[in-house]
Picture 1 (cartoon, rainbow, N blue to C red):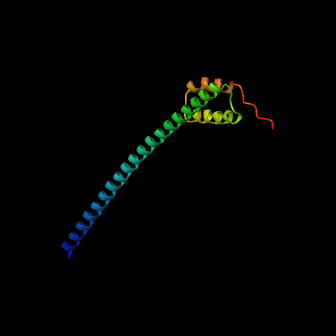
Picture 2: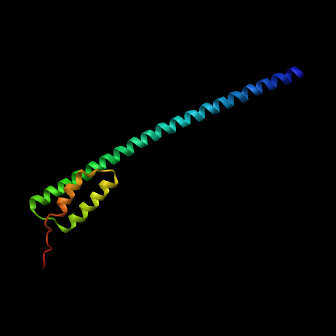
Length: 115
């Protein structure tokens, strides 16, 4: 019975060691997958921020050019551009659009029609 117990404990020890090794491998694999997923999320987040900044910048320029050609700014456009300008900077936009924004704000304002 002594040999049988030794054999049993030897097998149990080997099985326990294998289970611990497998668990360690699984944890490493899971951590690696999470890191990969996080890197993908960060790249996507950066792309979304960059794209949104580009869209906001384009719209501000587009509205400025449109209002400049008409030589007047509708009252609602001022608030829209101000909101876009703030969002542009909140997304990390630089000061390149500030000059255009200031020109836009200083365009003559379209008067509401009295009626």
